[in-house]
Length: 423
Ligand code: GDP
Ligand code: IMO
Ligand code: MG
Image (cartoon, rainbow, N blue to C red; front, side, top):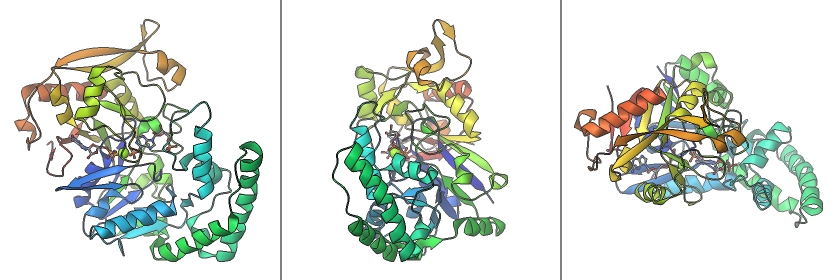
């Protein structure tokens, strides 16, 4: 019996979707615990590619139950689109998908406020999915939750109350047209009709499943460095992707977690603004982007690319308590004669002892690099650790040592088959 937390160890897009799909063959239940449709988790099976935003990536494994926990902020439109898309591919979610009655709903004004606040100065470079404004309302205790859908009277009252304030803000502060309250109420009532069957008391369900000896995989979105508490604030998302968030976001107590599995890309990427010490703004970075097809799965934006940052991953492993990791996209590095790895930072000529999350400092650090020889061989068909070229094994050993990682899975391509376990 396992209750595993799976976390992104960098700035998101590490390949969590692919690895959740692989691991979920050995789990009964997969649960998303934070974030929302800002996530884009890709699973490639045969010649088909699925991009999941809200539904756990375990949905592609027949028989696996998928749950959206209370820590997730749910955009009804995005959820229904995703269910429809899966059904078009012959994947039924009926009886396999459950949603926490305590999860908060993304409302049309959240998306609007997200885009308005990003149109001014001090841009974060958000995904525009209304994530920040929805979590603001959650913590201001004004949010509308899934449970509110079950009582039309309360739902109507809450939406009216919220709209009063939001329309005031839109009109007086942003000089924007007001939103029509009746059509929003109608839209959310229709949503209730569509999702009633999925609503569940998730903490009770998951804790009972643990008692029965079921295995649960808790799927994080984003990554540790985007964590609102431990990431590169303010250039972060508005939730806790780090492993601690898995408990508050599902109702599973910390004493029931058995292990933490990290996902690490063999180099580094970031989408949106904020400091990125190993970023490559030259043709090497461009080559990483092209070889790795580094374009956002949610927004299509080009991802910023750079060398592997062992100093950053060591910090994220500390915060997450990572036991084992999957190292993904190793094949992308086959295109380079030499590969650099950042082993530490210098600030004003002095080496730093710990990772600075203060963005002013982080923007000014100088990465300390070690250069390793590349392997320049196609490794996408390697099916075991032993089949990898010596230079690839050396690279893996080096980053594992520098970042303090225990590799458990190696990924050498986007497909299910391009994956092997390390003993
Ligand atoms: P997530 O958000 O962490 O689930 O990651 P994304 O799905 O946003 O981005 C990862 C991208 O890399 C997707 O397009 C995957 O299909 C792809 N991918 C995953 N693992 C590998 C790998 O080992 N090699 C290559 N070349 N692509 C991979
Ligand atoms: P997955 O789960 C990469 C980034 C955005 C922006 C910041 C805040 O696919 O790894 P938000 O819309 O959350 O308010 O944006 O966070 N971001 C991601 N970057 N992968 C993600 O998810 C991300 N989700 C949000 O680009 O910089
Ligand atoms: Mg992604």
